[in-house]
Length: 264
Length: 198
View 1 (cartoon, one colour):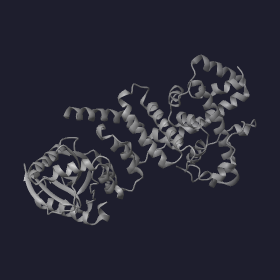
View 2: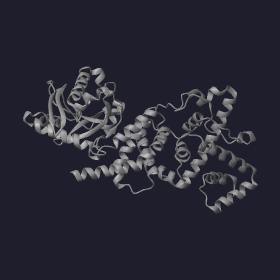
View 3: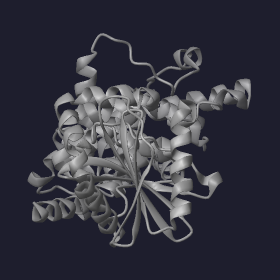
View 4: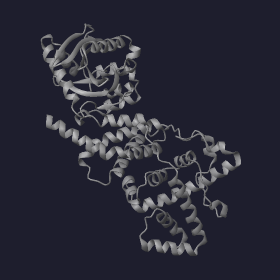
């Protein structure tokens, strides 16, 4: 065997890719050849150094979150690659405009279903059902993080609103994450908060117009429910928390919405 | 509808369990192929979306080389798209230094050149990042992704014999650059080998 031909085999030997017969051939040659023996030693040292150096990159946490959030969606929603890729380079602050521009038709149907006055009670019951469903094991969150900058862009391309994701940790409402839910067969954003052991679901859908309304209080199947309209959004807060505390929650969300800087 | 949703959830869980553990490997290859963080992250995301779409027809090979092959296609498609644009790299900020360094030199005969000394992580990463393709890819798949020759052949879409010659050539180049970096360090002090950790 010539030294030139052998060089490739040296690497295969180092990488453990040679069968016993070839390995013996190479070792026999190396034992008698000073040049090849030195080469083998040098390449082996280099390989060993590389193996013992942590060269593999660790995917940054925000990328991992992005991928995990991506894989949490039903694949039926993985329709447009662009919709998912956009949040990566787009400012999160552009989310509202983009979200509403994505699908006018769908948005219109949402308005229709969510806002019809005579349907109010039916919708409220659906919202409470969605809340109860979410409390079953493993249903609460699609994207699980207390970082609102992860939750908010997650909804891009999934619902036609850019839901307000507000950090209320200071007010002891802990942000748990977000979820895609369905009310009246339409996708809505659900933002999940917690106070003590009580889960609060904030459902957000879109409606046209800028009408504002005072929170409408209801109790359905023992759950407190608040519905109000603000900034082109339909908002429902549902929880088993006492009414006063849910009012406080609604107040905080509503207050933050009025100050766009803290709502985005 | 409810059954569909359950089946969908199940499919997603299977895919997650199979594909997510390889995220660091996918990201590593993306970093070395795309050569900057932002492009690498976009490529990884695109890779997982494509993998998810084709997961139903996935019958092997092992998950890791399958994902890496998809990633490689994503990166190549991106390069093809902007074939004339210059791709920014944040691996080699010390461009001038890199240019002074010979990429490839014949292995020297003198005994001291045959000794390979330890380099720090950042330097090794930079040296690998400066290798030309397709040698860089072969080295990364072997030394960082720990693939077998057979798997590298699958990812790169070439025969095993080609993988072997690429590795041999790539390692010879790497060793030459390694020695050059070693000499540069000895000449101008440790500052040379620092500061470009990705």
